Image (cartoon, rainbow, N blue to C red; front, top):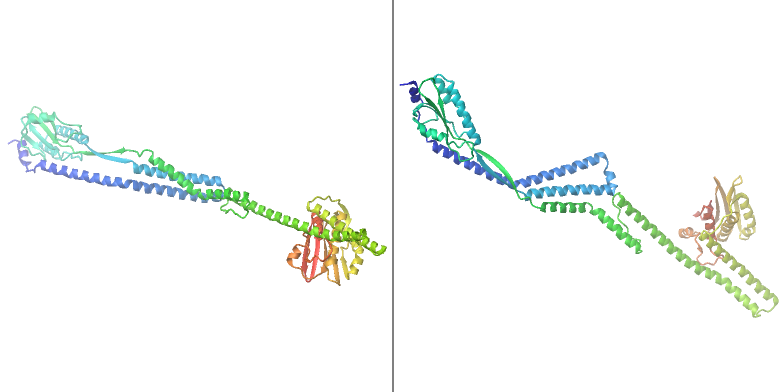
Length: 546
């Protein structure tokens, strides 16, 4: 028995049916592919949810980061104070929402079709490579043990279905050496050579056994053949195909989301603009009680604030105009009454003279004297009314000159001493130690002093003391006050003392036009000063500051 036959006997073993084993492996792979496809189908259903969460998280983090940057840079106040910056921020935020909705809509509308194909290219290449490697190793082996080791230790690759069957035969097909996976005792060389010529290598057709035949030269000995039989393992190729892109619907969704978000963010500002527009209509219609709500610190809020300020100013002006109209009406009524009383008296006495209803010439002269006195009073009333009208319309021209207020007051008071003595009044004249020189219109300041002095004499309690005080405030400014004892006067009466035709004595039993203090106020204000009146401890102090 030859050494090849001994080795052949030693390597004989019973092997299971390889076809059954291959069928079982194919069935397992088919089940695995089906499980993979099902899992991918489920994953595809959840894909849009994961993407939506990711996109939402991205935009949420982006917005939060943007707000942190705004806070760190300290530009929040600038944004809140600028309507342009707010509109730009609203636009960017709305655009981000529109993009996010578009992306999500695209992911929901796009269908991804996945397919799995099989390929045997790698397996075929591996069979050719390994068979040639075994052939070269056998060619370099001299001893039979080396040949056996090469066959038994043939490298197994993941691209092969199982370990290859490797035979070394003679030229008629008798097996001399084989590996563990080889089971045949004799091979049909003609059939093997034919099948080796029909190898489906480098194709994606169904897998089949690949036969490789190599001739081994052994230096004149009988011809030996290397037969390499193996099956390739399929490789799975996964491909994805986008089916449909949703058309323009995702972009319409994004545009609508952008518009709605922008309107929602700018709703308060748009509401304020609408409210301002309504306020302007109400104001134009004469409703000055409608107030615009002021929110924020931007230009719109400033506009609302200015409109409210304008509304209040117009309301004050309207109320002042109404008060002026009412006062004008009262002025006409009161002046008519004051003019009618002396005029009636004049006409009565002149009528008696004209009709001769007097007993003697002395009676006629008396009637004429009374008419003349009433005429003087009428003239004085008309002069006061005319002068007041000029001050009320700011239609006066001051003739300023520098005078000594000390000397002026001393002269006026001395002229009115008989009047005060007749009224049982004493007086104290308090003047600065040095002469106080001021630049005023002397004629009109005399009128002011006489009006205040006669008002104090007329309404002071008798007997009492009248106090006249002049104070130097520096820089050509001074305060002159007339202080007298009086009955208690209400706060309303004190505040209205300088109003035209106003009298604290509502019965109007006192003589006078009621325009004296109003004329005083007009003259003082024409000099750039102001009048005052205050009551304390049963005395009233009326005066002015220039």
